[in-house]
Image (cartoon, rainbow, N blue to C red):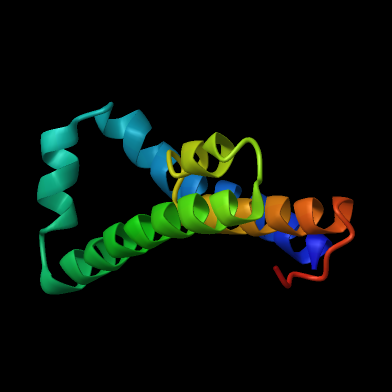
Length: 109
């Protein structure tokens, strides 16, 4: 699964940033415009609502599961939220797999 998670990290970084970079080049970091466009119609609001709730869920998972397993560097996947949930979640799962493999565990605590 580590290879899958690593590939998802790459895709979860490149795909969203490929969508955001042209907008950023055209508008700069215009947060009021970004918020207006994020709520411009029900579909956009739905997508952003989903992303925000998913982000909160990832933070809760990283902190609870990471602490439960005694993982280090939990700040890495939280920093990944700067790109999005699409990076943060697979990065956490990759780090979790590596942590479990290093301690010889099969995921059961």
